Length: 156
Image (cartoon, rainbow, N blue to C red; front, side):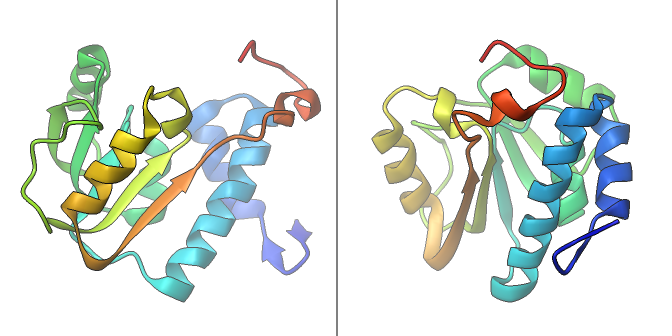
């Protein structure tokens, strides 16, 4: 299926494997297509850090390999370690107080996570600190009314 100039069949099939819920997979397929398009146009250079890594399935579709993944939830980190994934290293860490050296990453990625973190300014400041000059922060956030358009809704 094609929407505008975006071929969506592959993205939809890949997101269905990860999420299983058609309505969530559908909007994630659009997100995936746009992130891939952005990656081609501006480049997501390694080393890559992901904030709020969860289990890594979606990020694997964009990056293939991610140097470091962090999540504040130790259970997410443990689940991620048990699955084959794309992370070279995993860390249980707060994105507001990252224990990485300055200028360590070319790309910092956060997919639908920063809206859950209190004091977003601290997250931005630490992302700026760990990014090399000219590095890229790529962050997505869900639309407030997005849930109104899903067939199976969640209580966000």
